[in-house]
Image (cartoon, helix red, strand yellow):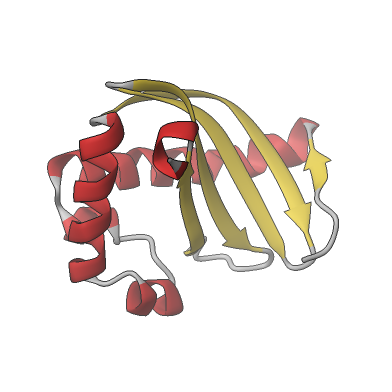
Length: 125
């Protein structure tokens, strides 16, 4: 993957205008264990890779270690190659500072998710 460059100003605001509502929806679906809501904004490849069975396993793994999602802040928007990533600092019931990373493809007007990662010390242990 190529070097990531931080995006700020108007371009950051444009990205957050679509990324924030998608992040809200994904995390609400996650908390409710609702795969249909969680995956609503997935691109085709992501939907295939992260099907309902994988979601249920991931949901159980994450919630057993750090609990449910509570809030997020401090979005950092970066670009690398053909992708734009938004990384939030999130609070879960049992851990603060969880990195939530949402990846979009540049030029995709539908703003489908191409990647989604949860990362924290408790999730890596």
